Image 1 (tube, rainbow, N blue to C red):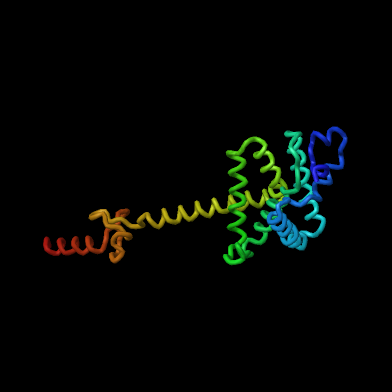
Image 2: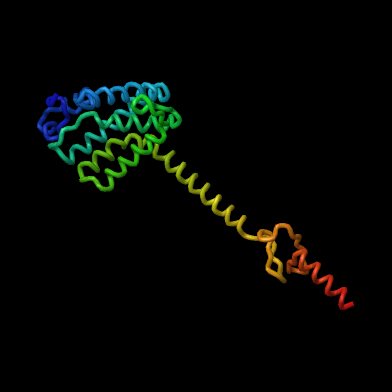
Amino acid sequence: MNEMLCVPALVLKGEVWRLFSFMLIPPSMKIFFMLLGSYVLYSFGSSLERVWGAFYFNLYVLIGAISVVLGGFFFPAMPIDNAFLVPSVFLAFAYLFPEFEILIFFILPVKMKWIGMIGGAYVAFIVIIGPLPAKVFALASVANFLIFFGRDLVRRLRSKEREVKLKSEKKKEEATPFHTCSDCGATDLSHSEREFRYRGEEAICSECSDTSSEQAEKEA
């Protein structure tokens, strides 16, 4: 297996086949993670291929492989396997099928959007506080996802930001009274049962208006 891993230092010495052979190695040699990774790649990858077609799915995988190999040349002695495919395929599936449910431990149903968010947060966590090699490979492992979905992600974030801003402005407008009595300071929000009339540009509530009318009658 070591002869198939992509080791940039060995590639530079002429072992060019390593640029391609590492894609044939399972994501992990541990049986559980091998089965899990193989399941993700086959099941989720098949769904992506049906949605995109073979050309765009293969392009997605190819961009991921190129990104990881290029990142590996910053650390020539580090071997590269195809484990990067698992998070990139997983995130793409979660983005396209957010409502799809999988059973955690074959019992607990969880929607893909939540698992995708956790996976994305973990990658961001590695990029922020991880050592330099981990930062590079974490970014490289999702480079194809960012290239395919980056523009749509930015658009959605901007749309969400506008939506939050509009809701904030609406709440602010709802909290601002439209009428304020110039005599007692009552508003249409604090005293919704009162009616408001205008004397010129000044508003006056029905209670103050009635009081003023009674005083005027007494003086008369």
